[in-house]
Amino acid sequence: MLFPDYRPRRMRQNEAFRKMIRETVLAVNDLILPLFVIDGKGIKNPIDAMPGHYQLSIDNLVRVAKTAIDLGIPAVILFGIPAKKDPLGTQAYARDGIVQRAVKALKDKLPELAVITDVCLCEFTNHGHCGFVDGHRVDNDASLDLLAKAALSHAQAGADMVAPSDMMDGRVAKIRGILDENDFSQVPIMSYAAKYCSAYYGPFREAVQSVPKFGDRWTYQMDPANAREAIREATMDVKEGADIIMVKPALAYLDIICRIRDEVNLPVAAYNVSGEFSMIKAASKMGWIDGQKVMMETLTAVKRAGADMILTYFAMDAAALFNT
Image 1 (cartoon, rainbow, N blue to C red):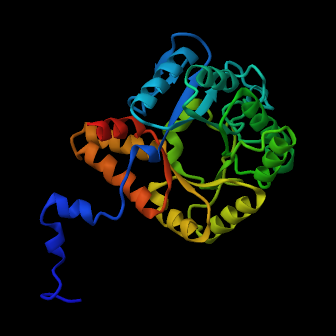
Image 2 (image 1 turned 120 degrees about the vertical axis):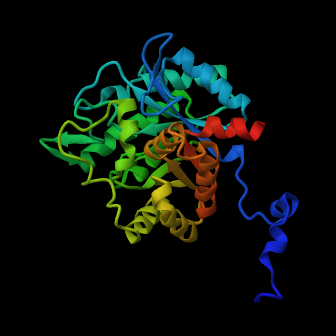
């Protein structure tokens, strides 16, 4: 079809027409809110690089989660900040760990909320790496038992879903096995399958105090230059028993979301990470962009690329906009 026989502007001339042919519709049900929980009571520590987000004690966590439910947000994902850290990250799988207590409190007070837990060791180790460290090397296979113990402890506390983010090879199969062996076959796994070694994570690492004390995470997180490798990672996690496949970050990896959506017949999640959030907030504060419009354009782009759900620090802002 060519002009003048075809005039695309005909269907753009009013809002009613634009709604009728809109191909991607973002909704509050697409959103998952990340929350940071810390020991103590009455605590609400601002995260400077992430305006509107806080390290929350459990009592305040429940209040914020209740607000999320009232806005229509169906799920949260929890990141724990323990009072003490050690080389093995033992608080990651302690029965009375901060995440485990937070899960119990949320499910007790807000049973309708879907509570997802991040499964990793970096927030809980004193070296800041995502697995067991032997010298200056992250030992993949030695890390698997610790990660599986953490996932099981979350399920025992009442988590609705576990989300391993460590990027150790074989961890999905290990977690699926321990959950099934302990009568938690109903607990799904959202796998951070294509998690890139990204500079966009900076504000998050401030929030959970997980900057590595030595080296970096290039030996286990993915090279940002690689796309085919993401397909291999995703398909491997599908075969190991993942129920949802995640791409992280989102905005700079829309092509990866699209390719995985085409290759994988499972729900696809995308993590609109802290750096993406903070850049928009900072530019909006300076008056350089319309923050609200850029937020919605960004989230719509992530869904248009193929994401079925979006983990985003914009969840409350976007949900409030939907409600108005």
